[in-house]
Amino acid sequence: MTKNKQLTVSCKIDLKQVVQDLSKMRNPDSGVRAVSAIRPARGLSLLEMFAEEVRFLRNSGAQATPVITMLLTKLGVPSEGPLAKAALGVGRLVENAADEPNYHNKQHVIEVIVAAYVLGLREKLPIYRVVELIIGAAAHDLGHTGVMNRHDYEREAYSFQIAEPALREAHLTPDSIQRIEKMLLATDFRVGVPPTRNEYLETHSLPNNDDRKLLAVQCLLLTEADVLFSCFDLHYNDLLSKLLSAEWQRPSFNLSLKERIGFLERVRFMSSASIALGLETRRLALLDQLNKMLASHSSHSKEATGAHSAKPPTT
Image: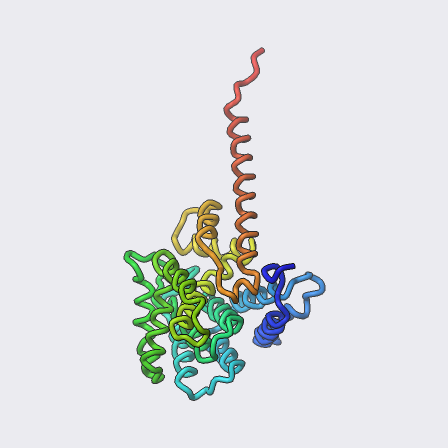
């Protein structure tokens, strides 16, 4: 197997630790066993166990600050330092947000925080850059009300405006604040993601400690974390598509298969971290699955139309 089709040994070790850490956040009185305990019965892969643990956080209504605190502890970040204060300050903003859209809500933010953490570690970013990435993940939808942008970067810029006072109050450096702002702007799916991908490719050959390269990696990883679970598998895609349909106040229960396919066609996982985790392979598999479903539905519709339009037999 190629590296694209299997997790590397080091990747497995990192991901297993994340699964165990997320599992510890379960309420022992909930009666729900950790995914790691039910793996043999369900035959889950390590990556699927990770997704199940994150899905549990969504279903249990987990809050942002305990998740952020756990991740900062794993990274060894001092709790009284500027980075930790900024991360927890933004986490509290997430928890106190007045708007709670069906999709772009606190649960989505927690998903992106955990995904960003995993991708940041796998990309071997310096610890302080991983923390900045976590802050960006926590802040990226603070200004989202469930309404799509009327102009470029509208919600993303507003999210930064909400987060900026907390960043300054934590005494983050101006450079760090500017990096977080650029990460947030990169998540505009229509106009932010394409140049972010180009910047990642343009800086890929630079030394690993080059500031421009590090920022390009941070921006790309946040855009990938933002859509990771929408591209993970059919069940997760179906859940999130239904929530997005409700957020957009569609009369249908779910987005159409064509809309879901169109979204997946515009996504591309290209970071070293996402390739190591097999995320691009999963996206392509899901895209193929949805295309087959669309073809099947179209075939059934044609058969039904043909049956209704056929002339009755003459006697």
